[in-house]
Amino acid sequence: MLISRRSLIASTAAFAGTWAGASALPAFAAEPFVVYDDELKNGWQNWSWAKAELSVPAGGAKPIKVEGEPWSALALRHDPFSTAPYTKLTFFINGGVEGGQTLAIKALVDGNAVESNCQITLKAKSWQPASILLKDFAADNKTINGIWFQGQATAYPAYYITKIQFE
Image 1 (tube, rainbow, N blue to C red):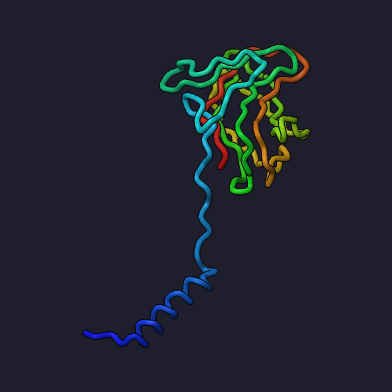
Image 2: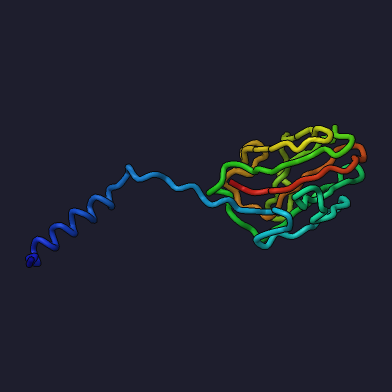
């Protein structure tokens, strides 16, 4: 079967026009940007000034164990990246034997913590999934280079955190 050059060009243009004006195409979500899953991933580094032990065996996982003095933090750093493709930070967290720790979640821009009122309080002896919108800790549509999980005005007992990622 022979196709004329003219009909080939016309059909190609019609097909291309369908794609060019394809506002009906679904928007694709960015792949999760994994920070920690049994170990630091994708160039993330531990810059904590709380006592942070990476890859602590706990059942079938290897979370980060964190305990600290007042205002100390699990501080995770990365080369600057845009949060524009993401809407939330997710992780699993366990308050350890005692629980009750209050942590502020903060983003870093140019190495400086961005102030927000985003805090979580941990439950004892229980893994809890957490999903925090980036806008809730002033990290949406910014170029950031780190995140903090910062203790408050009192020393805090060990907690565990794993599967940290931007989604």
